[in-house]
Image 1 (cartoon, rainbow, N blue to C red):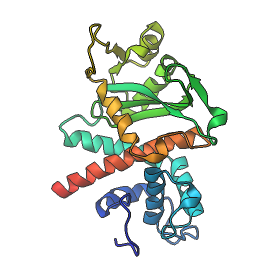
Image 2: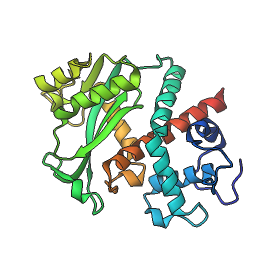
Image 3: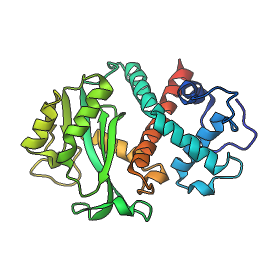
Length: 269
């Protein structure tokens, strides 16, 4: 499908669009609400997340900002990106010779500095010396998203293990048996919280005699996933008024990454 404007680097490709269309079509083509092409609305959302602009700064050759915003909220409320992330993860795992659902995961958190929009719900992370929000995330051993949620930055990582473990098991059909974590999750409470969901918590410890940078087994995978998110300028800080929007935008960013890889598989087949 061609577009009547010069394309942006963030635009969805034809192959990617063929994969995502069934998930994003929430109403028929002749519905009165469909004043703009779904593909262009999705391109608008991708542009906002990739380049970190304000909604009202939407380029004039994309649909109006309020149309992109309203449709994005409909998609987020319907959970279409969570469904996309799960299906794309299964496809990419099968393509790499793995089982569709993982048996191991890695969890960690990332603190995002607050802005005037997110300041009222922010907390202070004493370890990172930042005031903002904390993103708690679980990925499989390939770095693909399993689950995530957002809390104020002063929430202890160990207190969120149970919630993450529950979300991971719901996303995978209770196939995960082992979760790798760093030393910040040491203790009986996080281990007990994970075991209640049938998961063993494996703390990957740093070598006592450390000199320079050390690549910790398995643990580096989640750090790489966090690094992928920093390519999206909207996700560098917490610019969102609602924590649910911040979490949803991270899911969209993961979907965009996995869509690109799935489309490459289609072209190479």
